[in-house]
Length: 212
Image (cartoon, one colour):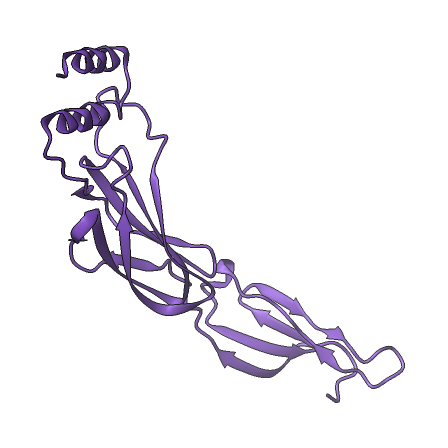
């Protein structure tokens, strides 16, 4: 208040302009809205000037918004019926809005890219929290990968869209236990078809014909 012409806010090498929100006929009232971004990371002071006169200055420190961190708290815990528990901890300097996991095949003999994955929704909240701890119960015994070695990887996203992830953990996907030898052979044949090639298919057909 009390100024007749617009002041300026100096942020390093950048000049932020004020606007008059009072209208042309009223006593000027100046207001400034600006956004500090990565380009202002080296700024340590902001200064208010009016007609080359320093009116005020303030020290500032820009703290970068880091990607969230997510981790698996202990190994997967196997339960009855093919279920297993995952205990997950995720942290962010502002808020974690989503946590999910992915299961992918361990090995493709033909080195083909992974086109399929098992997605596990673990936590979702638009407002988010700085610290999230969850126990997620999973069951994928009906999936063709059941009984195979797979990679488990966890992900967390913050309110800015930044994503943190864990390293891939190798685990065996729980499967149903069959006592009948033909049922066990059928399960084994089904597992072999996870990575299809003409050789694999022919081998599976031959094994099916040999079942008794």
